Length: 402
Image (cartoon, rainbow, N blue to C red; front, side, top):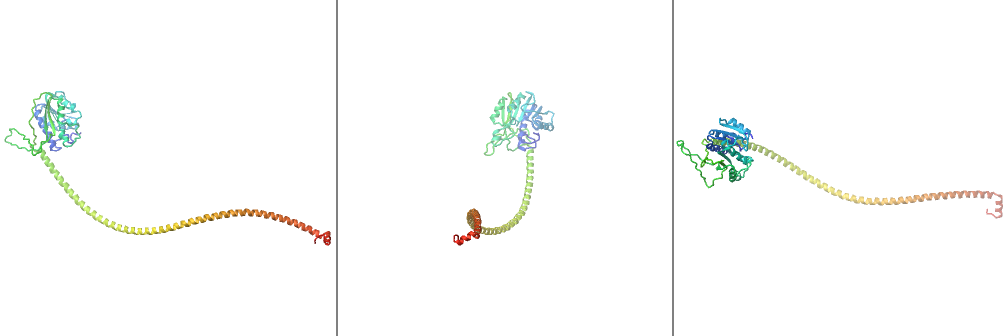
């Protein structure tokens, strides 16, 4: 993560709004009362604004952060003779045991996996009568009540869980609660040395809300640290409010500009819509004319279809008639074929008979020829006989016929 990238989890002065600024700044201003003249370690120091604030009263301040970009940003922008920044992991702090008088770790516990190791490291590096000031969100108010899950948090704590974790490493524990409240400041420049008071009341019927954060003051031994009854941080210069007012004014200007742009867009859209409506009406008119033409065409087509249907019906009747005629013709053709077959058979029989008859005629003709030849021989013989003298004599005698 770049030290200058604002995500809502690493506070950067001037970014994120007044609420997150008041939450983070109040913790460091409260820590000033225990940082005076002491060696201070700021765990997860981020961009270094808090470490620089503590360096204004401390003997020496070391700011430790795992992000190299944040460390470089702190070294460049938060410069003081008694301030140094180190890159290191909160669960393996790069400092000697029992070398720090005061250790702060604001909004770091919920971000690490090895939470037990982080608390143990803070207890390791602080002197026996030193102080550790540690803050973390109250899960009941921060997440449960808002139905919210912070994607950067590994694990959040309920009150009892937080106290149990601290109790395993510190014998002295004082738990405080932090919440951004609505309020008002009354002050007098003439009585600057008088004690300040905090009037804490609930206005209306709403009960006091649960604290958003726990702030624990711890020590390995019996610490003589005293706690204020209440601590209120007031931005007497109203710088963040003025920034908010300026932001609101800027947002109002941007909103007005957006409204003006919206109105212009609406006017343009109205003009465009009017043109589109006119074009649509013209298109509708054309479509209506086209529909009417198509309707006439459909009626004509229906008439043609009806005519075609009638023609089809007549054709069907004709086809049925032709079918019957074809069936009759087929029957007649079949009968004719049968007759032809029978005639062919008869013709074949007659042909065989004719062939046989021709043979018989030829045989008869041959017999007749032979008979005629025999007759001719007989006739010739008879003729010879008739011309013979003996025949004529016999005929005269009446023995032979003439």
